[in-house]
Image (cartoon, protein in one colour):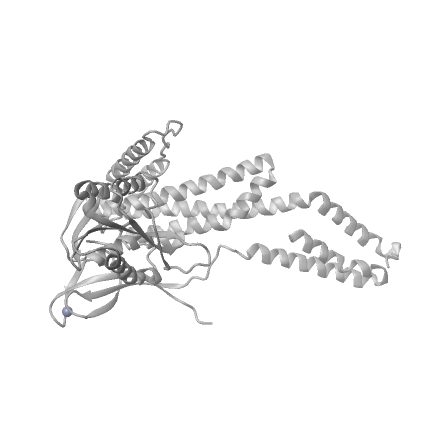
Amino acid sequence: MLILIFILLLLIPFPKLGNLETGQLQSFLLLSIMLLFSFLFVYQTMNPFRRNKEKEKTVSTLKCVNCKYTEQTEFVEGQYIGEIVKKCPKCGGDVMVQLIYVETGEKKR
Amino acid sequence: MFQLNMDQNFIYTMIFIIFMIIMTFYGQKIQLLIWIGEIEKQLRKLQKLSEESKEKLAEALSKYGRTKKDLLKDIEKFTKFFIISPVDLDPAGVLKRLEHLLDVSKTKMEEYVHILAPKADEVHSDNYENMFEACAALDYIYRIVRHYLILGKKTQSTIVIMQIHMQLPQIMEIANSYFKALDSFSKGLPIGDGIGPLVAFHLARGYPYREIVEDTVVYDAAFKDRKLFVIKAKGPGGNVGKPGEAVKKLINEFKKKISRVVIIDAAAKLEGETTGEIAEGVGAAIGDPGPEKYKIEESIRKYNIPIDALIIKQSLPDAITTMKKEIAETAKKVVDKVKDIILSRTKEGNIVLVIGVGNTIGIGQ
Ligand SMILES: [Zn+2]
């Protein structure tokens, strides 16, 4: 693909070669070479492996074992699903970590 | 059309013709050079990932007394670890031999971690084993890509270079996710592959459990007058346990009294499928190298027990990095589905086996 564009770019000035002044031809050639290199540059820097870095947040969902009390907090290192974190403020039962997951804040465009 | 004024345009025409000649005869060579350049760039990135991963591991392990430099030397040595798969020319008992090798390699990993961090507790040791495996994987990817690049350069083989170049995006994606997985492992966060154990946990939470085989627990649960045995790896350390061995033991104990087996696992999704999609099928949904799968299949065949498989679709990067919201939220749905299956396909008084397959890191009992 690269080579095809290479050749196409060079073909632009070619049919007109005979009708042009030397200066114009020069600028045509220059233009095509510049286009070529800018294309190459974009092609090289365009990194298919780089991704938009999204903001990631690790969330722990806590839930009371006895009642319907739930809470979402930020994950603290050492926490695990099934761990009893604290007492329920509503009924005094055990509050357990239900889920831990990562939330990606999607960028709005 | 081509009425060239030789005086004026001779030099430009010549330049053009020379260019055409170069492109015709050396175009492929130039292409090859471009590809090699790109591969080298990514290879440097892979090397960086591999080195950084080892440093991360050393950093985490340095809490236990040894210096980082000292640790790095040992890690470097241990990541060259390999397993030679058993000979399959004589297939009789090949799975038993494979299982033995896997057991030995697991013990060896444990030994390595013990050498690196003698005072780490069980949960952390398990997580470090996982980190270590990710490091070894990154190291291996780096060495493989380097091998083919050097091979391609040496032989000037377009095919070899082209193949790596074409596969690079996937390779880099895998390498990046292994690198990302390190963070999840070091913090003890649940990963996408842990959906099986997560479902088992939500299904049987609160019921008594015991460690039936090493690193594997079974809950004595109940649901609508059915007795449930729920199997998962022992958490919250990074374990996959031996679900096959546990199933074998339980089935040998209860024989035909077990009327159904339901197995839950994460499975690779195809591009275009939604992450967290639930699919239902039949068979031992377990992605181990063979021994555990064999034990499940053999045990249920022996007593003619039907098996239902539920898989939760996700990509490889999703499976080894911190669990995504989409996946975590399916846990409840899968629990409901399992209950549905039990209600509709078993009778009161039956015994049902439910197996949550996967790495249970970050998921306790
Ligand atoms: Zn409560």
